[in-house]
Image 1 (spheres, one colour):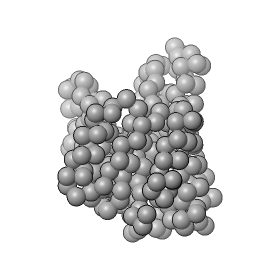
Image 2 (tube, rainbow, N blue to C red):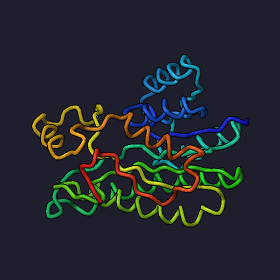
Image 3 (cartoon, rainbow, N blue to C red):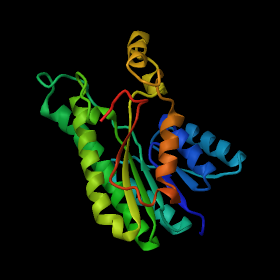
Image 4 (cartoon, rainbow, N blue to C red):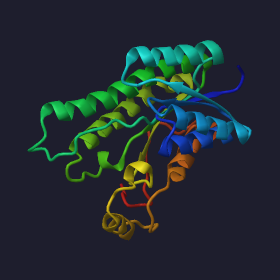
Length: 247
């Protein structure tokens, strides 16, 4: 029970998988949340355990309140509660220009994004308040600050997430809980594998570091923001994009 627990939603693939590994290496017991990727989550947990860490796959659709509550009941009841939450679960959306997108398409992304992060964030924060320690990290996107064609639903949803995190930082700080945004640019994952090489070449050409991010780049930033060393950092927006987006 004395070991700190980290819950990573969407923790089986891409940024989530890299974060699960990074936090396990940091000494956390990691809970790898997944919806349908049971085999992938199980293999990742086995890999972490083989490397000397501790990992537990947990199934829940974070858009479903009953499933989320059951996931937290398991962690709270058997492992003592959540100390770190990385809200990373991907929410699908319909990429369309504003003049072509329906309200229903737009609202679906905003509702899914904010509903999931709000619910898991609230349940995690209640556990953290009792323990006097907490780290909330919400995975956003540089598209919340740097618009791109047809990404209005995604960008606005992530912008709402950015704002919510500031409110949580203000309200929860007295309880030893920090809240921060990590905003990746494009990241080399399965989800972006099909992007045209010409587009990737363009991104590299406008990125000061000259490359596209790897999941580990994002995970290493999250690793710091969930550590003891980050106790005085809260309410921030941290791009991880090699300088492609400069505030």
